[in-house]
Amino acid sequence: MKIAVIYHSEGGNTRKVAEIIAEGAMACEGVEATPMSITKIDEGFVAEAKAVVLGCPTYGGTFSWQMKKWLDTGGIKLADKLGSAFATGNHVGGGIDVAELAMLQQMLVKGMLTYASGGSKGAPVIHYGAVAINDGDESQQERARILGKRVAEKALELFS
Image 1 (cartoon, one colour):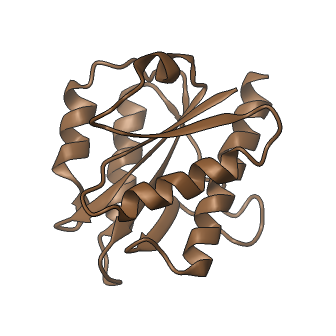
Image 2 (cartoon, one colour):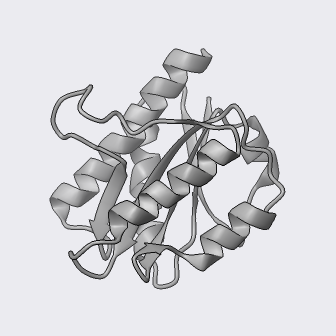
Image 3 (spheres, helix red, strand yellow):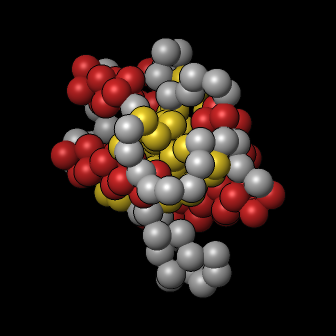
């Protein structure tokens, strides 16, 4: 099963978290996860993917305009796929959760099923998606890895 981890990254932090999420997803047998920048989308892979995880940095308390533009104009069919989100920020202080909610909102508009596991899997609780300050400390990176694994498990449950 294919899972696309699509991200926008300027300085590399979001790219690194995307790679960690893909690594977590591939911990599940039979899953192929590929991180890809919004500037270099493998459209064939995304078309075959059953799940798409979107991530970007937080700008001005919400998600990046580049991710918004890609979602508005990308032209890739995302309907009926499982969707999840992650975001990075420069500091604690708000906005990262808003960025994730904005991406989840866009997924719903596109007809995706959204998932983050919430408290259903126990600790760590992942309400909206993985969060990292810069590229994340060890615990933030582990949550990103766990998010990837949980998305893969849910995709296998729904689509196998």
